[in-house]
Image (cartoon, rainbow, N blue to C red; front, top):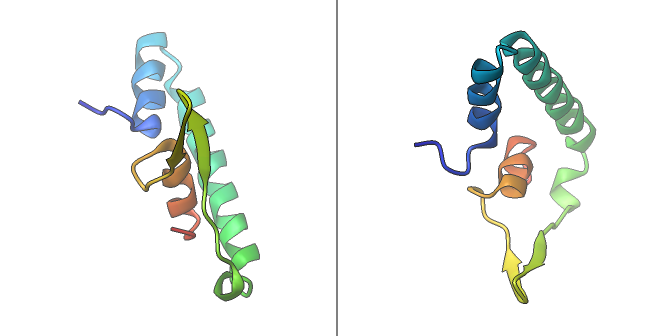
Amino acid sequence: EHRGNWKQHIQDAAKVLERTEMATQIMNDYNRRVQEVKQLLVNKKRSLRISFAYVASGQLVITRKKSFAGGILDDIGLL
């Protein structure tokens, strides 16, 4: 079970669709971009305070590391 793990979902879908090379390229591009953003934030990170929230089903939801957005923010070192 990989519920909520978008990176694993890409890999699983790629296997089913026989597009593993495309999935590898997508993840390589993502990882490259994560590294670029981390470098941009090196000197600004100390002064940054972020939170990410959204409305779903009429309720305010604060993101966590295990959410899609939270996972990305964690990858770039902001959570």
